[in-house]
Structure formats: structure tokens, C-alpha cells
Length: 235
Image 1 (cartoon, rainbow, N blue to C red):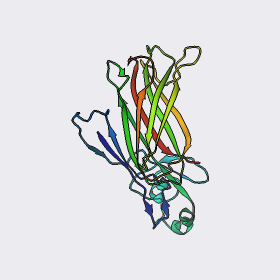
Image 2: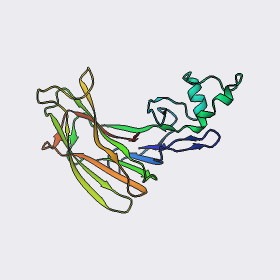
Image 3: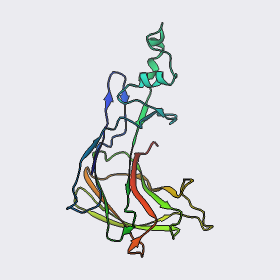
Image 4: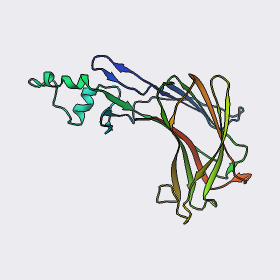
């Protein structure tokens, strides 16, 4: 089990605003077997951040914690504020809108002997932002000897208010010609399938997503990994 936290903060001194308002504590349970011994790992989200001006959306790597001035300075986008009269000339930085973003991406390793039909992978995350939209991906890795060109999965989502939705999703893994759609040069092909480009979480609280394979095989071979990715929509 892994505990992952995504955080929003605001730097008042530099008007350093991160509109990534998804404040999430994401609890990932490897399978749904309650008898399995569970371990908790806390992962600090201080890496994989990037920043951009709101009007360009050209992103550069960012350091967290930090400020917009130090990030701009790191990429030689501004002169040092304390050299000569630069501080006065850099007042525009505080008056400009900036966006910072990161993403949650976790991929489960499925058993080497195959993905059993009744085996669910559970994702539990708490959302506080019901205003912004997010990109929601399904992350699939398949072997090159996987016998199908697609993958059907059942996805059940339980909302904080107790409502439940159930969806059957088809993931296309190969073109009609037989060419794999995923990336990779070895035996594994990696697919990042965009399920919803503008998902909005309607209720604050904990969401639970269960994913299970919906193919005809009782034991599905050739799918090695399944996961989800959530990131703020930059538009």
C-alpha cells in the first residue's frame, strides 16, 4: 500500500500561485484482499513539477519548494533580481499569472501468471477541488505476444456521497494492421489512454476506483501493468 499526497500552496510574497487545487491523499491498495499484509509508504511530492506563464503554457522544470523568481533564474529567463537595478525591472514577474503542475501516476504490476477475472485493483483518493478540470488516463502495459488487439476493463467508481457508477471501457492496443499502439522497443508496450480530457470531480471527499479485466479469459495473460494518471488540465 502506498500513501501519496499532492499539495497546493501559495507564496504571497511573490504572488506565486499554483492552480493545481487537487489536494489529494491517495491511498493505493494492491488488490482488494483484506487478509494481505499491508505496508504504508509516504511519498513526498517535491519532484516532477513544472511551471509556465498562463498565457504561453510553455512549461519548464520547477523546484519545490521554491519561488517563481528562483525558477525563472534557474532557466536564465530573468537576470538576478539583486544585480544593479534589476529588481525594479522585474516587477512584471509578480504581476503576471503563473501556473505550476504535477501529476499523480502509479502503475500496478500484475501477477506474472496472469490477471485473474475476479482480481480488482483499487485506487482511493481524496479530492478537495470541485472547480477545475483534470486529465484522466488509464495506464496499460502489454507484452508483444498479448493475443488481443484490445483490452476491456470494468471500472467502478464510488463517490464520497455513496453514489456508484460502473463503466465498461475498451482500450485499443493495436492498429488494424497489427502494429502496437503503445511505445517501447522491447517486449513491453506502454499505453497512456486518455479516458476523459475534462473530468471534474463533483463532490469533495474520498473516491474509490476499482478496475478489473473484462475479457473472456478467466486468466488474462500478456497484460503486465495497470494504473491511473491524473493531472490538472492546463487549459
